Amino acid sequence: MTSFLIFDMSTFRALKKPLRRIPPLIAVDRKAAKPLYQQIYEAYRNRIVRGELRGGELVPSTRELARELRISRLPVVNAYSQLLAEGHFETRVGSGTFIATTIPTHSRSPLPHRGRPGAGPRSVSACARVLPKFERPSWVEHLGAFQVGQPDLRNFPVEVWSRLLSRYSRQLKVRALQYGDPMGLDELRESVATYLRTSRGVRCEPEQIMIVSGSQQALDVSTRVLLDPGARVWVENPGYWLAQHVLAAAGCRMIAVPVDSEGLDVARGIKLSPDARAAFVAPSHQYPLGITMSATRRSQLLQWTSQAAAWIIEDDYDSEYRYVSMPIASLQGLDTRDRVIYTGTFSKVLFPSLRVGYIVIPPDLVERFAAVRQSMDICPSHASQAVLAQFIREGHFARHIRKTRKVYEERRQVLVEEIKRAFGLRYRIMGASAGTHLALLLGDRYCDRDIVMKAAPKRLWLSALSLSYVASPTRQGLVLGFGNTPTSQIPAGVVLLKAFLGA
Ligand SMILES: Cc1ncc(COP(=O)(O)O)c(C=O)c1O
Image: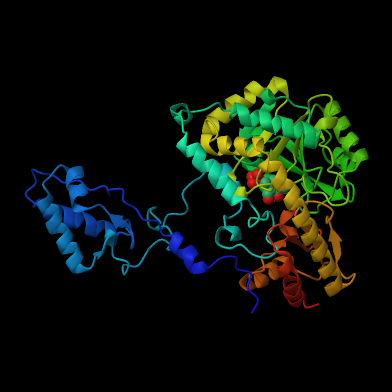
């Protein structure tokens, strides 16, 4: 059977169970009539029964707990003996005392409903209500063929990163432990500004760069600074679902503007809502259709923003990768009126768990952005910024982009060839000239969500195009990521896909 598993699942499961040695919250009352050993015994037993302490967790040594509780060791030893005898605790030679692994873990059971019996769901904010039901994304548990939004993780220079990380830890300065600037670390902002000016045609100075935790926070901060609840905002339809969630949570009214082969249809946008406050666009590589916005549409969009005094929030998430031409310069670089807020991320060019992205802010808005960001999470984490700045300064970043560009080019080519071999001209491929995904248009007789559900147990992680539509979808299709799908797995993946499509 073809397996797309990247690493051994038993290792993964073992890693997921962390050891814990933080002394549990146990209070003893020295004046109580109940003996101390019994108080400790009951406190542990009750917490185990309630599922607050779970199988496999390390408990403090008797000496540590006695010190913590400021009592003699004897009652602690007696309580531990009782818990061991009853099977609540177990010992492992050389490792210490643990909560017994035979005790069932409660970690997967649903959270207990603590409301009054018979009462309905408790009230939450409009922002929380408006978002669709949360489902743990497939990428948390699995990595596999065709997963969208994943870069090539196996080719990431882990040794280099580890070396820089250890050097950072060894030379850690007390200053680095302090809260930082809400705009981010100066050396990283300088590197990002240089990179964006030279590689993306962005007009910027380091003072305009804000380091954030990925594009998602960039979109969120920009929305909070620029848009009030009820504001009308053009969004690409279909478009990036998590950008839609940001706008929905902010109480904005999304105006779904269709995307055609030239990108966002500006004339339709003007017809639908001429006085919208902003447009959210990914002009270099639209998600999910992968279209590059034409020069005409770019100038129409800029013209509209200056007439309507609207903002453009440009999401430039993976434009380093283009296979049929040089990278397309940013929309921000064409804007002479400072109406574009440019956002980008290291999630696609390095790795998503890094959680580092950036915003290029028009100079007169920098102070407002800083104030809003400070109210959210104060500042970005120092360690990831410092290591990343060094990674860029030493040339590893540029090298990694050059290397992955070749890798993705090959994967893209193989995927397109395999799709053509399997399906001929039956399904249209869109957006294969850039980035790390393409869209396969299926036609109305298919339900893309059904296909996605059927494929998942076979470790084929497809994404349904219809889910990227703001309201009712006008197309059914699949978004196929090839960034983290090794070339050797692509032919077998397409064969499986063919079976699911019944083609
Ligand atoms: C359109 C689009 N924008 C941005 C991102 C990146 O988001 P982040 O930087 O928060 O990881 C993605 C990731 O899949 C994306 O598809």
